[in-house]
Amino acid sequence: ALYFVGRRRVELRTEAMPSPGEDEVLVQTVLSGVSGGTELLLFRGEIPAPEGLDLDPIAGALAYPTTFGYCAVGRVLQIGADVDPGWQGRLVFGFQPHASHFVAPLAALIPAPQGVTADAAVFLANLETAVNLVQDTGPLLGERILVLGQGVVGLLTSALLRKFPLELLLTADLHAIRRQASKDLGATVVLDPASPDFRSLALSHTGGTGIGFDAIVELTGNPSAVNDAISLAAYSARIVMGSWFGSKAAPLELGGRYHRRRVRLISSQVSTIAPELRGRWDKSRRFRVAWDTLGSIRPERWITHRFPLERAAEAYSLLDESPEKAIQVVLTYN
Image 1 (cartoon, helix red, strand yellow):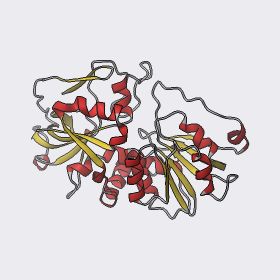
Image 2: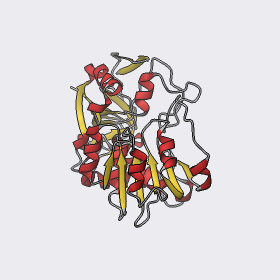
Image 3: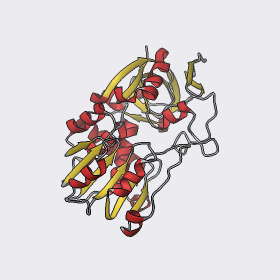
C-alpha cells in the first residue's frame, strides 16, 4: 500500500492481505490514476488541516501518514459468501487508495461495462466530475465558452462541451502538451494564458474587448486565474469554479467588470448533485452518462506516463516538478 508520510514523501508498506466479508469482494488492482489536483495538494502538504476533504466517499481530515487515491481499477479476485458468483473476475472501478489489493462492499464498486478497458475505466471519476461541471455550466446553443486549464478534468470538460453546438469553445493552458491535446479534441481556439496579450487575444475571438464569454469554466488550480475569468466575462456571464485551491488564497478583483456586469461565480463540486437537478438526477445516472461517453472521448490517449507502484515517488515528483511533460500519470501493479 502507498502511504503519504510527509510533505513530498511517499513510501510503500506491506500489510496483511485483507479477506472479504460475506457481502464484500477482494479486488486485485490493475491500474490506478494519480490525480494532478487534490492528490498533488496532499503530496505538497497544501490541504488545510481543519477543513480536510469533502470528497465522497473519502471525506474527512487528513494527517500523515495516510493512504489516498480515488481512481482504482481492478479485477475481483475473491468473493464473500453472499456475493453472486457472477462478480468473480469482473473489472471494477473503486474510489480506493493506491494499493495492490483492497476489500470493498459491492455498493462501493462500479462494474465496468463490457468492452471497456482498464486504461479507459481509470478516467471514470474525473469524467463524472466533467459531467457535473458541464451540468453546472448549462451551455446554450450558440454560446461562447472558455475553459481555463487543460489538465485531465479540463480536457474531459472540453471534450463534453465540444458535443454542444457552440459558436466558440476557447481553451487555455500553460503547457504545450495539454494545448495540443485540446486542439486534437476539437477546441475552436487554444491559447497560452502566460502570453502578455492573452486577455485581449481571447476577447478578440468574442467580437471585441467589450463583449466577452457567456460562460467560463475555471480548472487551473491557480488562484490568479479567477481574475482572468472575471476580466473575460460578458454581461451576466457564468463563471463555474471547478478548482479547489487547498490552502492557497485567491485574491479576487470584485470591482469594475465583475460588479458592473453582474457576473455570477458558481461553485461546482462533484460530491453532490446541483439542487435544481436532484429531483431527476442521482449519482448512478451521472455515472451512466460518464460510461456512455468514454468510448467517444477516448481519454486513454492522454495517459503519458506509467510507473510501477514501486516507483510511485517518481510519479509524484514528475507531476510536482515537471507538469509540462505529463497529462495523465498512472500506477501499474504486478
